[in-house]
Length: 164
Image (cartoon, rainbow, N blue to C red; front, side):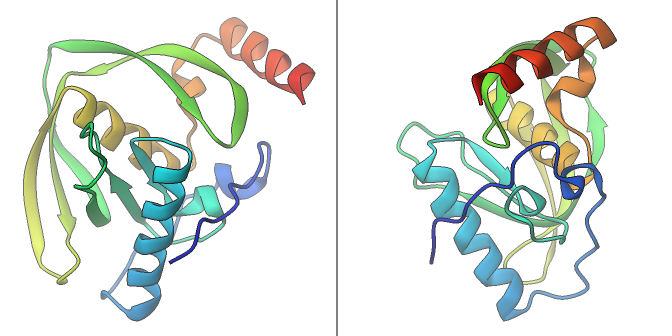
């Protein structure tokens, strides 16, 4: 297990949809382990594989306070999203030093392949739901600031560039 370097914005891999996982292999397991180590080192509540330059549809999420309950997901897809919104301050280690309040559905039902290669459907609520949606955006080539207006997005990116 290794703490990996997060690739910096505007690396094109952050704007590229990751490739589906056909089976859980040693490479996928290693990627999950590296993502978990990297997530806990930040500290954060989730990571997508393309954030560390691995172009697989693999994410991890752990919204517990203890940071010992990571959920490993391959090919996650949102099946249902609640109508009730939740606003949360979001950020990314790929664009350091900035964050923004993003509104997302408060709860989601997600289908994914787990570490055993089994298809699972699970409900996530609150911070768990926010993080899952944020990570799915990552592996779809989308950043959290894409949910902002063009003006706010531009200001956020300029602010991040000044901090570099």
